[in-house]
Length: 68
Image (cartoon, rainbow, N blue to C red; front, side):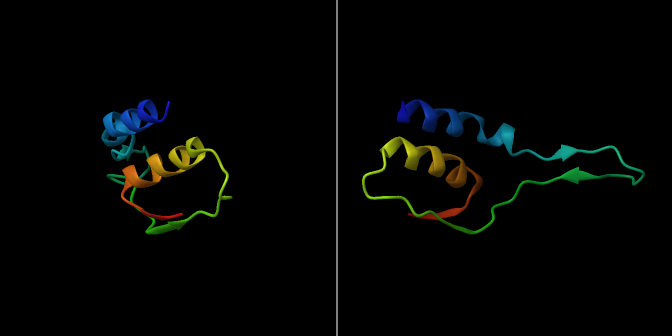
């Protein structure tokens, strides 16, 4: 399960994070996805590893740093 989640984000991150054009009254408007920086997560020591993968895969694929 974890490997398929990591593979999914590795294969699709570029497509999911590409700029999206938005129709406005201006000549060009778009939505840009950029890293937020350091993302801090607190999880119990006995949390399933799947929870860490589910949190970390999208955060790391964007370019954030993750502290767990």
